[in-house]
Length: 121
Image (cartoon, rainbow, N blue to C red; front, side):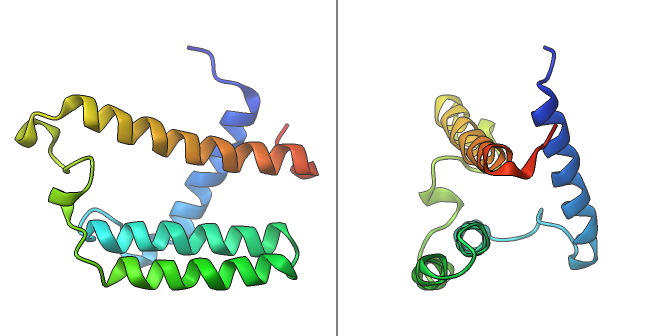
């Protein structure tokens, strides 16, 4: 499958950000609820920067509260749609659905950067 130029550029940016954060030790050993809370927190940061403060700051603060609740919740690998080992649960369809929604999140972030004048290509 030939990738769109925008996807290639965004994937390069994602890799750059991952490498910039390698000093943190990676994500493989992190708990599901921690990673989910970080996702919500990062969405909040994105909204604030994208909106240049103002209402974006208010939304970020709201999302920060959600992120804190998630981090201290009872969410575990067993209570989310995809366990780390899909063969352990046999829920291959659920795993595919989680992967697809994760791609949707990344795609929408890429689209916002592209159409807002970020000019990925």
